[in-house]
Length: 272
Ligand SMILES: Nc1ncnc2c1ncn2[C@@H]1O[C@H](COP(=O)(O)OP(=O)(O)OP(=O)(O)O)[C@@H](O)[C@H]1O
Ligand SMILES: [Mg+2]
Image (tube, rainbow, N blue to C red; front, side):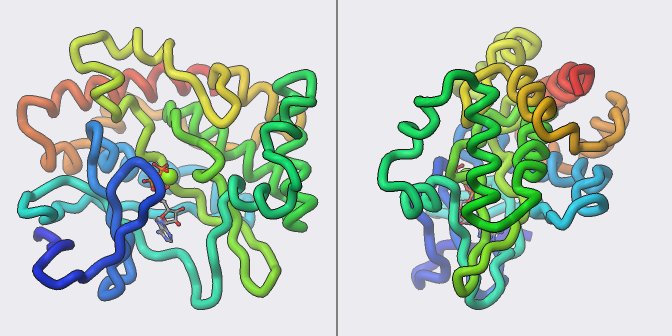
């Protein structure tokens, strides 16, 4: 079924933040995001499906957003996208770390981070300072877990608006883990389809600290311990998860997308 997001009437709100065009639809209480540079929706969905097999909601007071594939009729065209249920309860707001620090620091966050002498100290500072400001004692574990998920699925977009907390009446809580759209080499404009995915995998760097994924997780884990437990996936398990999602994409691209996703997960899970 195709979801119509834009008709003659405005039925949804669009957000100006972020790369992907997106809408909140009041009628379904869901957020919709369009594919922009490649197969972001497939990445978003497949990562959230694999997280079902992890310890994220079993061992921690954290949640993660479930994404579903969508065919969206937007700007008079059928496009691929994904959707997720609105995770905000009435009265709750999402505060990204970027916004949080603009509020609590009298200077840009970068100034506080730059005065520290190593990446390890910067990671520790951001995790512990956020725990202190928000009174969320497990925020360092939450951040480590995010970095581990990003390292496994090669999400290159964990900037400070993709890490957040929730706020209600001045009290903070953990935000469901969201936005894996830039994982698994989904941006085919930067990571061209004509190049061996293994070569791309070596070149992707992690955010928000702009280092290799391995360094970022080693630094976070040395300080806060390893958090993520998730099975090692075989090629056939990955393909089984991908098959229904690939149906949304052009037949000529399906093999290529499957190869790239398998290459990412099979390569990266060796380091986890
Ligand atoms: N399921 C949801 N429930 C509540 N808010 C949401 C949900 N999905 C998205 N949002 C809102 O939209 C914002 C952007 O979402 P998201 O990071 O997934 O989009 P994006 O376009 O990939 O962003 P960017 O390109 O900046 O990383 C979130 O910070 C949040 O305010
Ligand atoms: Mg985002």
